[in-house]
Length: 180
Image (spheres, rainbow, N blue to C red):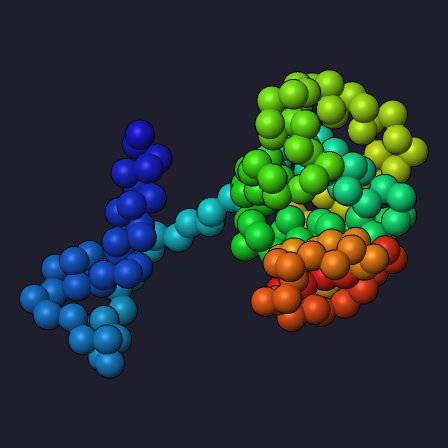
């Protein structure tokens, strides 16, 4: 609780200098006066979110079930869709893949017909498991390159589905067509 209070105070000092400096009026065009040398300067960093082992394995399971047959390049495309839907926030990767009817390879899990633990165990036996875990780790960094051009959806290229008519196709990777 104390950490949250200190973080809120620091953010207030950065966002609303008039409150932090006791000024009566704040003008965004005029910078606030520099603090005196004896005044403390508040600096902070927000730690990067780290996936839990279960979150990491859940996302890797999705990559295996959706695109292991397409190899690392195909799984990278699926990871891009997960990342784009999660707005690049690693803390949203697992909730994104576990949303019902979003990834057909996970329908048994999201509908409750199979436990998450059992599905992960099945995925771990696939030869692409280690590659999937590595892709999940790579996707958590800000500099990760999106091979799909911002795609948020994909389907098998041979499949013609009505919902793709309203989307722009960005790329085909292996047997998948990607859309945004």
